Length: 277
Picture (cartoon, rainbow, N blue to C red):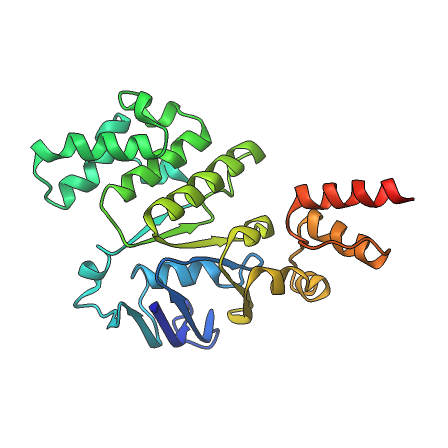
């Protein structure tokens, strides 16, 4: 069942409308799925994110959430279903402590103050930040800040979580930490996840992958079918993970790889191959 339906979507930042940022794209996102939207800088992927959450208004086409078209009249109601986490968590902090920051969204949703503490405690625990509730958000590490930002939007009980380059400013350890966190949330809550990224490594944990190029959709398929398109991805300024490159190279040299995305499996099968020669 498609929770998000996008048809012939067009958008431009140009007042004259001559330069289209989004050029008539159409796609569906299934309820409870994990979808990555990847592309080079300027491909239009972050614009898609802002259109889906109603931060930008389309020029033409349609965006439906649970069958309901997003309009200026209902955009605020639709936003109750969709939450977005941006690249720089500092831009989303409001409260002086982690607890205050998570509470801010609840206050905007007019949650009874007596009901807030259980919600704050639950979602801070979900992102492993329950021990930092009285800390100042700006003094946390990059990964911890993103955890707090995610807790803040989860507390508002969205059905759809959009991550707009949410790991772009993190070091490799922080990126891995947030990816594992989001994947765990997806599995535990059956939440629809949309990750906007230029990090090809995220593709392998997705259910579906949408590849953007110059405002249009170049590919829309499952990870295994996308990751083997080395030349096509390089042509649009993307790359494929090292594990995939290695597995394809090994297969070209006679090593049977049953799963080109599983690095542990590659190592296991390579060891078996070496023991035979």
